[in-house]
Length: 287
Image (cartoon, rainbow, N blue to C red):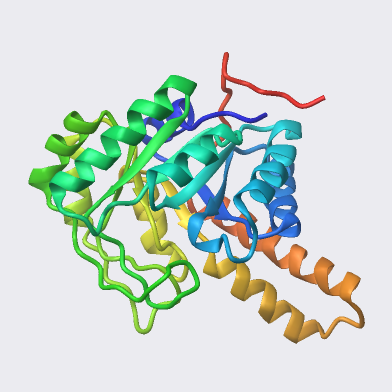
């Protein structure tokens, strides 16, 4: 069933677990993620990032993501990840995305608030939930970002002002993670996370989950983070599996890659302590 993120993320925050946000870049990855969620009986955030529009168009992502989400037996949130501008986000909503992220984290606080408010005002007309980012989760490589950037921690004092000013539904915070594969061991500030979590009742989001370490991610999931983004671990895992198994043809290669992606998601469902959620009154079911 295709749903927005409202009830699921609020319940995750309250019950102390996180829902994986899995970036798909083609039909095969979307199928692998949703089928794994169905087999596990667990909710899933099926995400498409604006930065991946060179791999697949927004229209293609809406068709593929919507197809699998509507026919799923578990709640699936079709989410636009790292939306960079209002027009692109507006198109995503019109195409059927039920959750969107506006990432103005590199802008000034005032400009971030203004753009987020604009997105929230439009999205909420269509029962679409909105995620924003305060602070900035940088990038170690170009796999999930258009450029290499340093992380900037979220300031605790800004959280309440930002949430009240924008009416945003969830907030991505920066506590030491980065997009892509780490060069060295990530050091997360759980003290900062605890301070932020105590300041707001809305669900918190962690970007840059790949290669952050199971112990770190489990602690995040049980300490206020309701959504954790994973991408590089899926893509790199699939590529490693192909190298290891040396499939004989293209069809077998796709199966090998899909199996490894399923295994990675099953692992993270366990690490995040993801629990089943029954969504009432929000379903969009396929035929």
